[in-house]
Length: 346
Image (cartoon, rainbow, N blue to C red):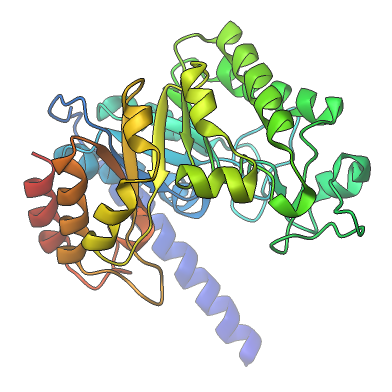
């Protein structure tokens, strides 16, 4: 009896998915371009969301909506417990990435149709899940503290001073630069650093960043190199991430600082010593704004206030993340969300 019910549930689920796919294929979103603006207006899209939207063929409608609301960038998580695209150098994340598919390619194609810049966001950076097969295959690539501890923040960390780790990153990022010539950018974030528990690794991270960026630019000089770090003093002190040095040495083309604060007042206060003013003298900048999670979501009013505070300084912004703001997971209607962002994005 239970087996029959299970089979019936599976059939109904597959039928539902098939209906959604057919409907989306029959209603392809028309192309669109957001209004031209120099400010960064971005959204982060996780590997889960991107894969789901790709496999249900809903990605074109989602990007069309973002384009209509005058967003101009989407940062796609492509590296989280493996890649979401076929790679010669990294294993696939088979939890969300089906064989013989390429969600990144689909994202780039639909992003172009909607006038959006698409970035490959390497979310895990120097961090590895403790069960990661790369860590099992190359235990000598991993860092240890002075007392032999490897797990920091419940993750393993690659050694930036290891020549094989350096070559791994050069191979991985030059591969995506060559394989996807229409990709607009590559983004590294706060995990492109090393926890202070491993000691002073600032020089190693500086050298690794320089070599990787130079290698990528040899393959595709048009790719935007974006970094989304924590505020500068926190990043340097806690993660050996001297990102202002990278900006001044022209290794970075864009900075999106994660200033995840509960209120607009706290965002404004944090801007003063975040390093964004220095970076803005050299390159386009933005502020990462946290929209909440599954259990606790910010109100649209609060999000709009934080965006308004950032725009007063003529800085751009990016919202983390699409899943918790532009879907039913957020406690607001699509009409309410569109009404808010039609105002803040013009």
